[in-house]
Structure formats: structure tokens, C-alpha cells
Image (cartoon, rainbow, N blue to C red):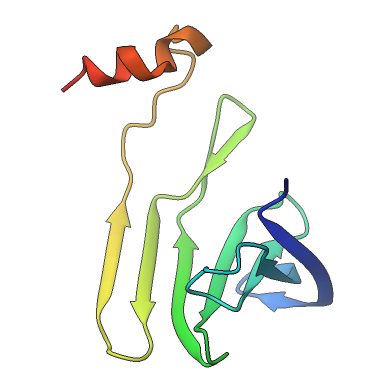
Length: 119
């Protein structure tokens, strides 16, 4: 089952790119969010921004992605993700470095028992 339902809203500039603006609504009735607005660049489909709305449909949080780099001529990953709570002013920033691809991991390396042994 899909986690969200989607609706295309519009196209608009977002920074240096043109973006699709998509509304997604969680199908899980106990979600803390009523909906999210997502800005995705039209060229490479990189998420630029997500706005989260609370159970009263008031703006709650904004998540912004920046510093995208392309790896292995295929994978785009952001260097920074910044989440800001619009209701209480708190924020969290994640900075990503040293991405590793093609490390030799297989699907079987991600079973529950193997992951428990990594502690």
C-alpha cells in the first residue's frame, strides 16, 4: 500500500531551477501531518523543499535541501538538510560527507539478525 496520495499543484521557480510543486497527503490516519508540499526540480528530480502541515492544517515545519552533488554519474545527494519548526523556532541541520557507493553490501546484509549484531 502506498504511504501517500499525490496531487500536482503547479510549476514555479525554486532557487536556480524550475520546480514541480506536489501535494502529498499521508494515508495513515494517525500521521502527525495533514499534508506536505514538496518542491522537486524539473531537470534532475532533486527535492529542494518540503513544507509540513500539522493536524490543524497550519504550517509546522520546513525542510530544505542544498549542496547537491552527483556521484558515479548517477546519484544526486544533498550535502545539507535543514529542518526548521515554524511553531517553536527550533531547528536541526544535518551535513552529509563521504558518501560511499558500491561497497559490496548485498540484500542479505540487511536482515534483522545481522543488523542486531552490529551494536
